[in-house]
Length: 157
Image 1: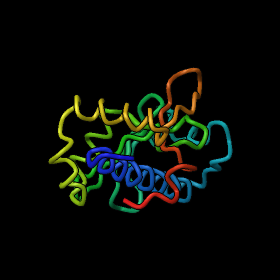
Image 2 (image 1 turned 45 degrees about the horizontal axis):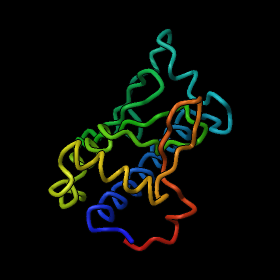
Image 3 (image 1 turned 180 degrees about the horizontal axis):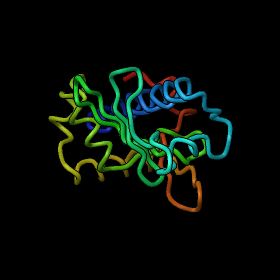
């Protein structure tokens, strides 16, 4: 059974996962990328080309950095930092960036009012991990926490 804070954070994670995958698919469509490849973003990441930063769909600025890509909505300032080298797990959860996503997503303002610091975020993410709503995809031998879609596909928030 989830408490109210866990339910809120799970809702945020589901929204993040959905938006992250939406943006990755939008980018793949715009740049004709094959997401089934091991390194589908390789041609965009290279600093030799000017594609490592830019915009998609005229409303999202993007910038590749390391193994991630930061997206920012030009109008709303919504921010998503998406791990891009995670073999299809584009909803990789980072405490810091999940908090930033929640803070910059107007429709999640009610959640941010309750989960508005790293201590609450850390404790709640650990509780969701203990309850198997978040799992470690164990990619590249580093912790890669992602939404457990098998467990959350029928969750009513």
